[in-house]
Structures are given as C-alpha cells and as structure tokens.
Length: 164
Image 1 (tube, rainbow, N blue to C red):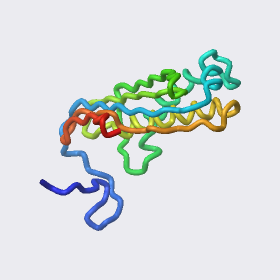
Image 2: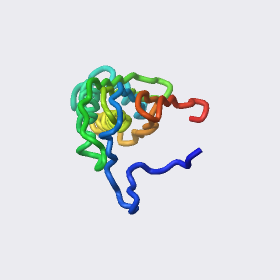
Image 3: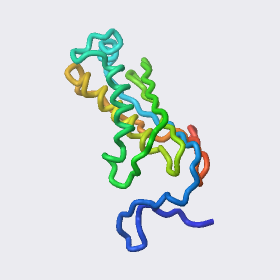
Image 4: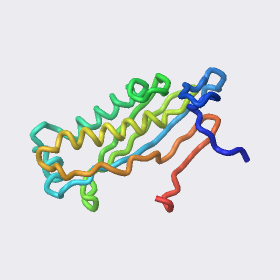
C-alpha cells in the first residue's frame, strides 16, 4: 500500500494546483455539517423570527449556497467549479441547544466538491453567528466536517460515526 501524500505539494515542495485534465468526468457529491451552539433563549429568538437582523435561517441558507459557489476565490488551490446543485439545511436542536447545518454540493466533473460543501457549512454557521451575536456573544461554532463524498478516483467515503 502506498503511503498517503499531499496532492497540493509539488515535487519541489511548493504549493501546486493539481492538474485534473486527465481525470474522468463523474458525478461527484459531498455532504458536510456543522453546528452553532447557543443559549436556549437565543435559539427561541431565532425560531420565532425576532432576531434584530431578520430571518437568520433563511439568510444563513442563502449565504451557504453563495459561499459554495465562491470556494475557488477563497481557498487558493481550489479549482473553479460548475456546481449543478448546492443545498443547505438548517435545523433546530434543543439538545445542543442551537442550530445544525447540513450541506450538499454536486457536479459532474473532474474534481471533487468536498471543499464547496465544507465552505457552505462554515459560512452558514458564521452567518448564524453574525445575525444573532447581538443577543448572544457566547455562541460556539463547531463540528465542521465532511460527512460523505462520492465519485472520483478515490471512491466513496462515509464518516464512521463511532469515531466521532
């Protein structure tokens, strides 16, 4: 078995954009998640639509979608991609307490969409924080991670929940 290597490091040790020109076009999907933990009162404020800045959940959904489309502008060695679908689901979790964010990015192409899904989750969480910070500066963003991906040369991946 070959030892893992970093794909964005060239033979000279410098950062390098991966050449995906010879890769086959396949359907590629990635799912990521994150959360924003907050006081129960803050969650209630968001869910009743009484946050000062407006509809927190709708704005965070839109911000996540927009962010996925801008990933190549934010992360230096990412390829610009023609995404065919981006979705952002935000659900309340009283046990957290807070909001859980789940994102999906999809395309047919030569490179994966993991970074787009992760960027969408990150920016959606940041937007939630921004819109509710006047009520709760103690909010915590966490759990940003890839949940699954499919397509491409490296095959499918599903996070083993037993390992956290």
